[in-house]
Length: 76
Image (cartoon, rainbow, N blue to C red; front, side, top):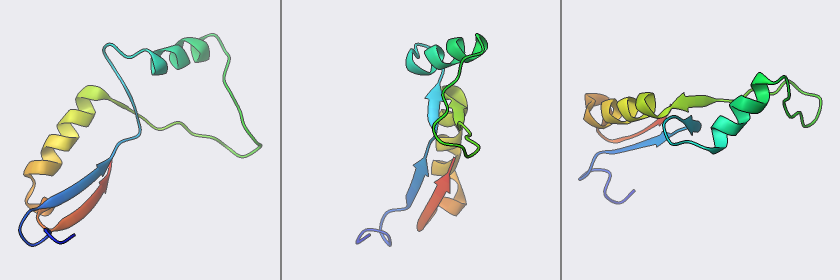
């Protein structure tokens, strides 16, 4: 925070990332495609995913955007 006037700061928080060379999320996709999924509790559950290529593009755009000057928080 002490550098916010000297250095543009942008915080990006990514959800679960999947893509090439991924093993963990791929296992979830394989399990889900067979009709199996995990449920904890009784509320509706949602899984937020982003492909690695889209994440990199979003991070780049956030870094070069004029809106990134000062402190901003982008939830991707």
